[in-house]
Every structure is written in structure tokens, then in C-alpha cells.
Image 1 (tube, rainbow over the protein chains, first blue to last red):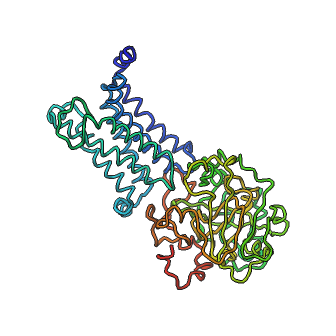
Image 2: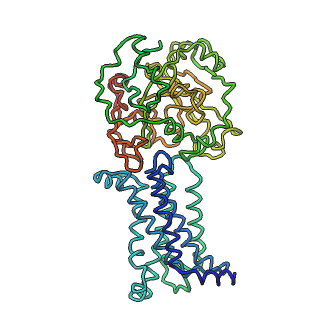
Length: 204
Length: 300
């Protein structure tokens, strides 16, 4: 683990941003050229949404990975978080611009379709996190920054729930995502809680 | 009873495929009962993009082979469709196991180019080959008192990887009212583009009810039962609030998950525009009479 951590320490953060950003233009290219099948709009929407969930899970795993197996990804956590938000935005944009298209329909969908309401709530919760993902905000907000960033917990649950709810019938994959997210949150339970005011040794 | 209906959609609405141009159903219609079906002006169909063989056979909902759209095309080849028989029972004069070949030898196969509208708000135009369900039901002889027709898809865990997951309660079940089943538009499809229907599209024979959402058009049928009570149907069992027994295409009645006012034709690529959904999927003239006096918002 020590050597692994040493190797990780040598990887620059920009490399993680770059690697994480690559799937976006690649998937878009595939969508334009037929690589995503005969219905690329839904496929692209799904790919971006699934990537966002995967990055969300990776971000939530940083703390438990360090605590339980000593793997240190802390240096990349902000990059993972910012990338998560970027894919949520892309997912949302594909839905708005390519999928639904009609402005009047968008609001109706947000209000009327519970899985969209839940997804939008997750997105809204993530906005302040993305806005404050910079050193200035961390300094400025001090201990409040940490408290604010606990919003990622409800956002993650809502994101996982969004996927479970939109699936037709009982589908196993979305349930697995939700279980992993729940598991990663449960790992934090003994030492942290969303509403407790107890001092956090280490959280997020 | 064949040739009771002729296409308004022509091959101009599906992928031009030279090999099939000489067997346009328009011609079959001319040779058959008449010109009644040609009433709609040709320009009403303009703007429809063609659906290719690839589109029709790689984008499928057939959860017995997986829930992703490309799963059926990948995995349905394991389904053994020969030999195949259909058990026809219930309120019929001649119940029994009907071998697929024996059915085919009695039926008149014709081409029907239909719009296909999925409840998920996507659509295609598909040139089916098939025979009228009415002919099959008459072959078995529907008895007095028969009011509904129930259908069942094959359930074969060794050939269907998807049934290992409880996505739905297997086997897949569907049903129609008898008058819907006997309607000239209702067919059992056995082919597409003149080719044998691929497994992912419901080989060897499937129902096609073009004015209802696609999930009503049950695939790979092994059993047809004429009953006097409304039969349970799979999606209705899974979510009665979302999927009604009738499930007629209706732009005015929204599904809890999707607005049904518009749809996207498969094949338009990443920047495809939505199109308005037509009442009864464009077959209002033919089928509205079946539902006269019914509240379609209640009987969704």
C-alpha cells in the first residue's frame, strides 16, 4: 500500500481531470457517428448519468479507502467531485436539449415525474458543492465548508434513487448502485452523522 | 379474412430495399379486395424517416434476454424456435397444440407496414409480414361466451438469460378484448422485410396491435387462451397505475414516467426532433369505434 500511495502521490491532479474528462467528447463522438446504437440520445443520456454515479461512488469511497485499507486518494478527491458534477450537468443537458427539447415540457416533467424530481433535487444539492470546490471557498468557509459538503450524502442517495426509480420493472443494476452508495454512507455512520454537531475527525 | 386492411404507409416510409420493392403491399392490396386503404393523400406521410433492418433488429425491448436495448440482439439467438407449437385453449371448439408449420400452411401471409409506438415514447415504422389473428382464432373456433384473448410468451430459463432476474413475473402475459383481437389490423407477425422474423423481434410468431403501445404486442407466443374474463397482463401486474389493460396509444393521457404527447422516431440520430404522437397511433379511423362511449382516461 505504501508503494501504491507513493506512486499515486506522483500523479498530477491535472492528469486525473484530463482522464476523467476524456469520455465526454468520446461518447459524444460515438453518438454522432452511430457508435451508441440507433437511438443515441437516450444512450448518451444514460452513459453520462452512469458515469456521474460511478464518479460519485469513487468520491464517496475516498475516505473509507484511506481509513480501512490505507489507500490515499485524498489528493484527487476534489477532481473526482468536480468531474462528478460535470457529468451530472452533461446528463442534464442531453436530457434538456436533445431529449425533451420543449421548454414547457421540461418543467412539467420535473414536477410530474417523481424520478425526475428526485434527480433534479440531487443536482440542486450538488450546485453549492461545485461552486465551493476551490481553495478560496475552503479558507473562507472554514469549518462550515465541511458541513456544507455533507450535502453530498443526500445528493448521492437521491442520485441512486433516481436510477432505481426510472428503471422499468425490477432491474438489478440500479439497485446495485444504490446499495453501494448506501454502503459507503453506512461506513461513515459510527463516526459521523448528517445532523450531529459532533466534531469530525475526518469526513466527506 | 386476409387482406381486410391495406397499408397507408408505403415502402416510401421504410428503408428502400430494392429486393422488396416488387412485393409492396399496395400491389397486394390492389390484387386483393380493393382500394379502400389508399384514401389518405400521399403527402400526409411525408417527413417520415425510414427505419432500417438494423434499427428494427438492434433496438428491442425483450426483457427475457436482458433489459438493455441491445441485449435481445446479442442474446436471443439462443432461443430455439424449431420446432414450435402454440397451445390454443379455453373457450374454443378445437383446443390443442398447433404446430407452427401447420398454422402457417393454413394462413395467408401478407405484408403490413405499421407504425410501432413504444410506451417509452420512441417509435418506428416496421414492414411486418404476418397473418390476421382473426384467421387463427377462427381456425380454433371461438365459442359463444368468449370475451377476451390471453397470450403467453415462452418461458425457457435455459435459453433466456434474462428470466433469471425478476424484472417481471414470468412468463410474459398479454391480453386483448375479443373484438380487438378480431380486428383486421391485429396480426400475428412471422416476418420483417420478407425475411423470417429474427428472434429478438419475437420469433417465430408474435402479436402486432399497431394502435396500442408496443408492450401489448407480445413476442414468441406459446399459448393463446380464449376466456370470458379479462386476463392478467404482465406490465399491468407490475405497475397497475402505469400500465393499463388497454394501453391504447393516446397523446392525451400521460404515463406517470413519460409524456405521451410526442415521440421520437428511431433513426434520426443525436439531433432527432420529437414528433407529435397520433391518437391510436394514427389508426383512429380504423379503431376508435371499438372504444365508443368509453372513458379512455380511465381505461388507459
